Image 1 (cartoon, rainbow, N blue to C red):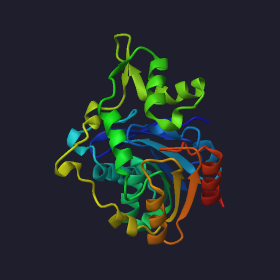
Image 2 (tube, helix red, strand yellow):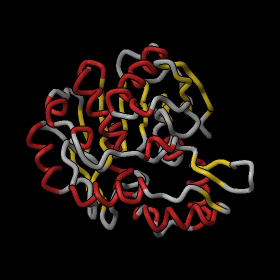
Image 3 (cartoon, rainbow, N blue to C red):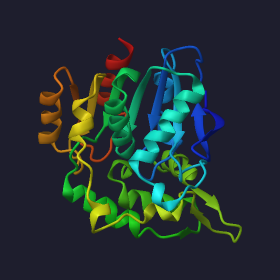
Length: 278
C-alpha cells in the first residue's frame, strides 16, 4: 500500500510525512539523507508494516515539507522537528531508520532522549564521516544544475552523482527521482528542495562538524549499522569502532554498494528484518 500524505505543524512550519499504515502498532520513523525525501523508503516500508506503524518524513526544506529559515537547516533543528512529530503522534517510544543525514538526526535524537528510542538502524553513517566522501557530496550538492527538461534528464543526473543508483533499471529510477522535482510553470522541472539547503558552509566555524561520538555514546537503543562495502562515507574502521563503543551493535555490510544502500538489497533487507522483526 502506498504511503498516505499527512501534514502537521512543527516549530512554525507545515511539515509532511508518508503514513504506510498499521496504526496502533509500534511506531517506526524513517528519515532520509541530505538531498532525499520521504519516498526514498517506498520500497522498504512494505517489508516492515506487518510489525510496525511505518512513517517516512520529509525533513524541512525537502519534499512536500515547508521551507524554513536558511539558518535553521541544521541537525539540531531537524531533531526538534522529529521531537514535535512524535509529540503530535503521542508516541513516547519509537524505532528509527536513518539514512546518511537521517542517521545523524537519529543519532542525536537517540543520544539526547535515550529512553525514547527502542531500536535504531543507521544506514551508511556514523559519528565520523570520511573526508573523501564528504567532499564528493558537498561538491555535487552545492553545484547541482537547477533545471531539467524531463525526468530522463533528472535520472541521468542521479546516475552520475549517486553511485547506489548507477545500475538501477530506468523505469525504477524514474519512479525514484520523480518525487525530487516539480514543474516550474515554464516547461522545466526544478528541485523541490529549498535552494538554501544547498548552501553548505565550506570554511569557518559553521563548517566544523559537531562531535557525534558524544551523543552516540549515550544511545541506549539496540542498534544495527548497515554499511555499503564500497562506501566513501562510513569507513570499515569507524563501523568497527561503533561496535566497540556500544557493545551489542550489529553491523551488516552490503557487498558491491557504495553510499548509501537502498536497504532493499538482499543482505540489507535480511539484516533489517532479522533485527526489527525477530
